[in-house]
Length: 172
Image (cartoon, rainbow, N blue to C red):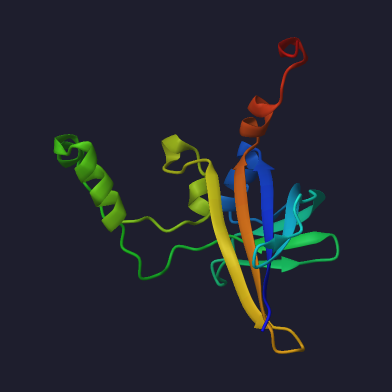
């Protein structure tokens, strides 16, 4: 029985206005991004992988869970939602300052914050300007073999991309 996986990495860079439109206003946005597909079957892969540019339709629909779907021009993505039953655990500033680093790490491991569109907010507004999540679909092909489709989605502020681009004066 074949156990193949198609792993697709998605990289999307957003402006501050796009991040806030998506996370606060919950309005859909369209953006050009890049995806990199790699087939894996055991130790056999289709690497080196090729990057493809495409259009992304990105939504923050509270009535749906996270999903990634293929469209004619690229992909449609709904970002993850904070579960309705989630209760955010809070610490006072005084309690936080009393903790050593191991206690802080332990507290975070026991009180994880679910990934959601709110991650796209600026740090000063409670976000991280970054959202990373995965969407996994397992199915069988027409021969009954297991096939896994794994999407790794990464959304960042466009300034991260701009900082990483070499300036002509820095190339020698």
